[in-house]
Amino acid sequence: MPEDFHLSAFLPYRLAVLSERVSRRLSVEYERTHGLSVAEWRVLVHLQRCGKVSVRDIHDFVNLDKPRVSRAVARLEAAGMVRKLAGRVDGRLVDISLTAKGESALAEIVPIVTGIEARLLDGLTAAELSTFCAVMEKIHARLDADSEARPRSRLDALRENA
Image (cartoon, rainbow, N blue to C red):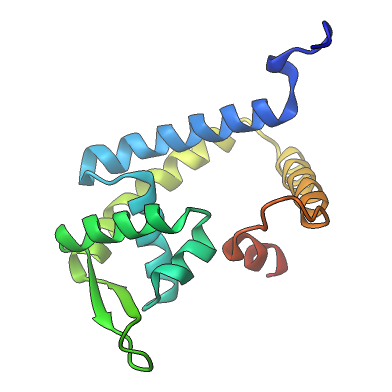
């Protein structure tokens, strides 16, 4: 390995560490208040945005593998936060939707996590935040053009095209 390589300065490592730190900080809140994992949180938020969807739809949108989504949905169903119904078109497929308990949990959690996000961004100017977002989009575009890279989640693609 080259002697001038330092993991702490390697951009992929730095991004992963930052992402994990932010995710863990947010998860402290929804785990403490509602016993939710990161995957469960993402499933709930996606259902709030999209209504009835399948596990495959959730997987495509929230950047989690299908088994992790399936386990999260099963735990949320057991907790009474989501319901599963046989699909209208194909009874083998399952439509998943929020229950009133799931909606209530999100109504309590979202203000907390958006407050944390606001505190994280508080030290940035509008120009710095705009530049940061533009740089992230340029990196996404490079990955979009790389046939070996995993595709963006559909949620990220929708947000960028909005």
